[in-house]
Length: 308
Image 1 (cartoon, rainbow, N blue to C red):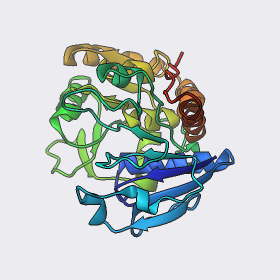
Image 2 (image 1 turned 135 degrees about the vertical axis):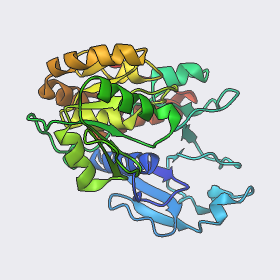
Image 3 (image 1 turned 180 degrees about the horizontal axis):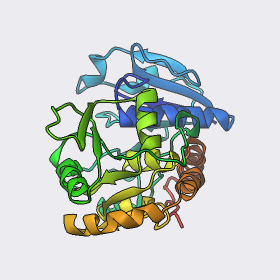
């Protein structure tokens, strides 16, 4: 197939850039499966596995922007990762990477988890996948827990700080910078690349006490790929992503503190195996190809595949 991917942000991502990184991994996975990929993205984008059509950054923000003018005639399908005011006259699917404030999504929308789809009146979803080669698996852990993400209230970083303190664990918070006022707490600032991979690989546990309905939770997979179990809430997609062998989930801060000792029973090898089974860039690409082919043959999207 010849698939066109559209992103309204430049690739590769600078800093965390979760959505941009997923688009890059999808392009890599599709190419490795033998498909031709064209990436339409703002000028300066570079993805080795795709033919890049550069768009003017101001153009993509205009209300009347029409992506159809830039599409190659040979594409079989357009896969957008940002909303388009004008949908081109070609087979098109759209991945919603966040939560809509209200209303249902268009019928050609692909979500990130069964929970994400169900909350928006859909059924088609594909789990995000990462390239295992970008992560370090380390079965022997250092003596710290980790919080990785935006320092936003809904991400639950305050719960992570309070919970780790009450559990008697040293915590590294990566995702912003603040001065540390106690020896057991370190703010590492924003991290990416090898620095992030090392933090994930060394952590005994990733705290993800989400206080909103996570559409997916990419850091969950990044931790498991590193052999690091997860301690989180049962919000959004977390119960789909985190199996009992790869972490523990609770509903309150008190429950998470009580569960923290049992996280040691999650084998790093089991965490890595789950991530490799369900959440690689190749698995993601295979599932998207299944969606594409079904949509091209029937005009509808099939249900997503739920993890075991």
